[in-house]
Image (cartoon, rainbow, N blue to C red; front, side, top):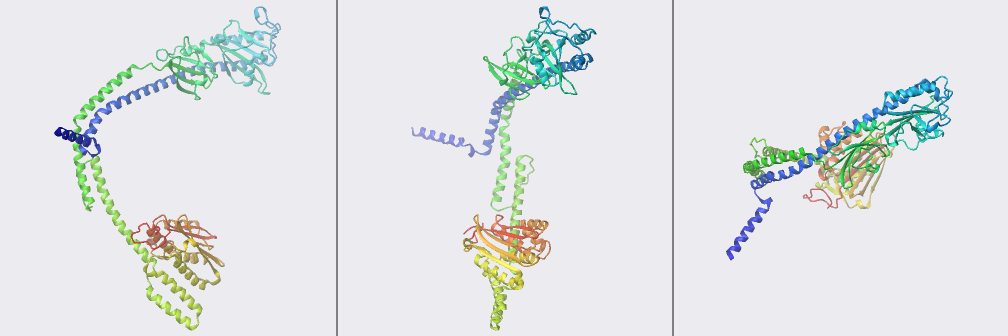
Length: 639
C-alpha cells in the first residue's frame, strides 16, 4: 500500500511538472506548439472560411443587386426624362402657347351625355383640333402614354383622351396646384388620387402613373397653365417584373412616401414601411416578418425619388460555397498532418542555436563585452544574434560616452571657478589691502575690497559645490555693491529672498553670471538708469530664482539662438572656447545651465524671455535642497 501511494505521488508530481508549460525546455515547448498548429488551425480556419465565404457572398449579392437596381432606376429615369421632354415640346408648340394665353378658347362649359366633355363650338380655324391631333401624335409614338391633358390658367383644357368628371374648374385640382407650386419643374405624382379628370378607357388608379409640369410666363413669372400625362403602369413593370433574385426574390417600386408603385403578384411582403428603410439613398437591411427572415436591398432614383427594392429570403444558400468549404478543410487537415512529422526537427533546429546564444549572453553578463555571435544564419535566431552584437557595441559606446560626460562635467565645474586665479592667495591679499585702506581712512576703497573679498571667499566655499542660499545672496550682494561703485546712479538693484527659501541650499555662483549679463548686455546698453530685480521663492515643489532687468533686451533671432544653445550648453561652450562672440557672449549663462543639468537633470535649468527695448527675464528652476546631498544621492533631489 505504501509503495502504491508513493508511486501515485511520483506520477502526480511529474504531471504537475509537465503541466507548468512555462518551465518546460524550449524544444518541448516548440514541439507542443507545432502540434497545436497542426490541429487548431484546421478548426479555426474552418470557422474563418465559413464566416469569410458567407460574408463575401453576401457582399457580392448585395453589390450585384444594387447594380441591378441602379440599371432599373436608370431605365425608369429614361422613361421619365422622355415624358419631361414631351412636356417641353408641348410647351414650345405655337398653338399650345396661344391656347395657354387665352387666344384660343376651348369653351369647356358643360358635359355631354355619358359624362364626356362637350367640345367647343367656336373652333372655326380648327386650332383646338390641331392641338388634339398634336397630343395624339405623342400617344401614337409612345404607346405607354395613356393620355395627355393641357389646362390653361382659366381652367379650359384640351386633351386627346381625358375629360373632366364635373364642370368644376380644373385649376382647383390637387395635381394642378402641385404643378403650379413647382413653377415649371417636372414632377412625378405617382398613382392618380381623387382628381376631377378621367380617361375614355377608364383605367384604374393603380394602373397609371401621373406626371405634371406647369407652364410659366418668362416675363411675368406667372403660371399660365399645366400639362398632365398619364403613363401606363406596364412601362414601370416592364423594367422590373422579369428580374428575379434567387428562387423567390423580386423587385418592387415605391414612391418617396413609401406608397407602392409596382408590386408583383404574391409578394413575400405586401409593403415596405418607410420606417424600415435607413436614411441613405441605397443600402441593405434584414427584417423578420410573418415568420420569415427577409433581405431587403434598395436604391433611390435621383430623378424621380422612387425607391426600387429587392426582396428575397436570407436562407437561400449557395451550394458552391459548401463545396469550397469542404475541399478547403480537407486541404488544411492534410497540411497539418504533414507538419506534425517535421515538428521535432524544427524544434531542435531552433532550440540549439538559442542555447548557444544564451551562453554568449552569460559571458557578456559576467563582464566580457568582447564576445560576439559569429554565425551567419538568416532566420530570426541569426537576427537576434546580430542584434546581440549591436547591443554590446552600443553598451561599450555608452560606457565611453558616460566617461566623456563625466570628464565634461569636471571641466564645466573647473571653468565655473576662476581658473586663472589662486583663490587662497588672492583672498589673503585682498584682506591685507582692506585693513591697509581702513588704516588710511579710505573707507570707500575698504568697502569695495571687502566686498571683493567676500565675493572670492564665497566663490571658494572650502571646495563645496552646494552652499546655503544666504551665502549665495551675500555673494551677489557683494558683486552688486562693486558694480554700483562703478555705475553709481545708473544701476538700481532690488533683492527679494522669501522666507520659505531662506533655509535652502543651492549650487554656488548661480546668480553672478546671470546678473553680469544683465548689467553688461542690458543696463549698460540702454540710455539712462536701469533696474535689476533678483528674487527667490518656492513654487510647485522647486526653488525658482529670477533675474529681471529693464535693459536693451534681445532681438528675436538672438533670443532664439541663445535658447538653442541652452538646450546643449556643453556643446555651445566647446564651440565658443570661452571667448566673446555669437556663442561666447553668454558663456557664463551656459556654464550655469551646464552645471544645473549635470547635477540635477533636464527637469531643472534656465528659461529665458526677452523683448528688444523692454528688457530680459531669466528664470532658474532649482530643486529644493535642505542640506548638502551625499555623494550617493544621484538625483540631486531633496535631502
